[in-house]
Image (cartoon, rainbow, N blue to C red; front, side, top):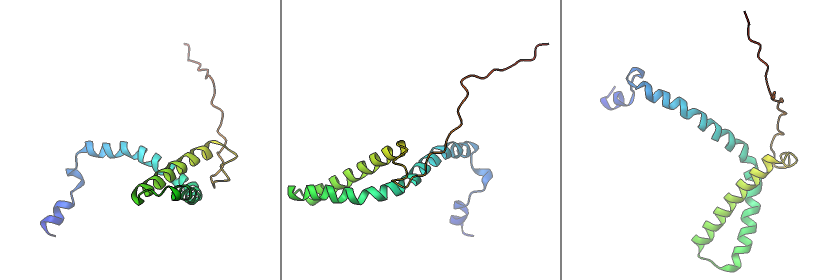
Length: 120
């Protein structure tokens, strides 16, 4: 093994415990973002083509420079995809229309919990 390869493969003991802890704390936000984006893929796929066609149709007569037109189309497409997904995921009747699973019914949380202490 060359010195460069040995430098890349650090033994676990040489990694600071703080950096391991940092990776664990970053895991939760990454998982949350990944779950959000995974669910959003199909609604984005459904709405993006229609948005591109409609925005492009209305921008064609304006004759903007191609770079500006592309930026407007990309920006409006991204915004409409996010807005449509956010609306569809919050309205139960729209969820199946955009290919989202229906929300599982959640158990009602108790308003208050009575705790009996041992009195001796």
